[in-house]
Image 1: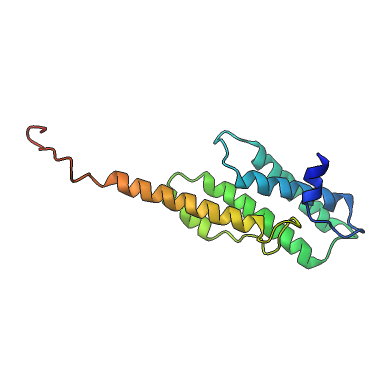
Image 2 (image 1 turned 90 degrees about the vertical axis):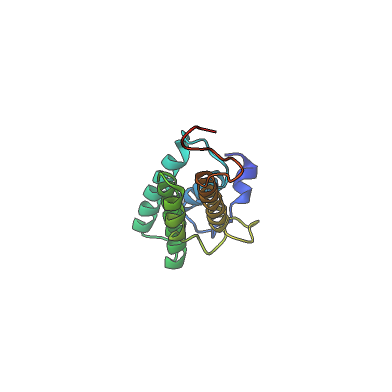
Length: 155
């Protein structure tokens, strides 16, 4: 990881384990990837979120684990990313929008530069995207009144 990338992640307490530092770095990367427009065939984010789940379970099992509030925030963000990926797999935009409403973004920024948590930003972006998709689906299904076709003769 480039030094600039690592500098963006919030600094975890000095006593943080290597596992927690890696989890925070990967979480930062996943949040950035989720905010970008991705190709439907893109597989990396899904694999990274799976790795985050594994790291989070290992962190919970450690003897010197972080405070429960910190672990809860990590869990919330990982669950949000997982739910967002599941919502993207749904077929209709109305199903995606409904699933998106039930997602809970993180409450605390992951990076020191963020004023608003990245997951909240991603949540708002996806909500706007799904609303736009629903709107275009609805407007495409309404016939244009300027185009009049006669059912009998086709004019």
